[in-house]
Length: 165
Image (cartoon, rainbow, N blue to C red; front, side, top):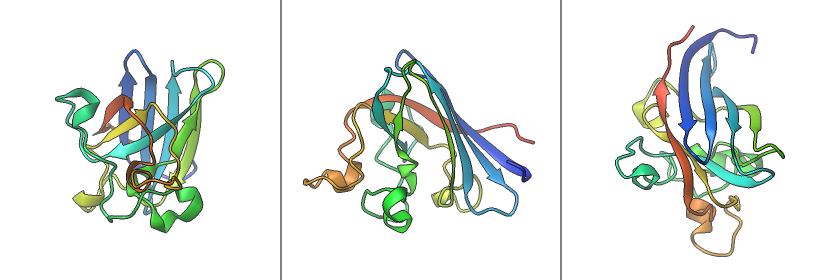
């Protein structure tokens, strides 16, 4: 990242299923966020779905976080298929841990925000890692267009505003 960072948010995972962070950076003169995943203690060599969910309320653990963050009311899909026809909270849909259970990756997501209109901000929402693989909305049942058949929620972390710059 060579551009100035103007805002930062972070989700910190620290439970028996996964540890690490997903960090979101707002760059100067940018409409989206640079997203950095640094996760470990995942089951080795597995693929898991990962999404931003609506709420950051962990009253009932991961069960109280609502559905996928979807302020534009799109069907479930993938930014790698059609970025304009997928939930805002899809992120990269799936992560794949290496043989030691680690996942490190970064990408730019033009749809998510830290600041600006509250309905598009990820702050106060959550990142959820699921037990299953996201089918990218290509499955043959109605749930595919809602959740990608991602399965149960394995781990979650609230996205908080972080000290920046």
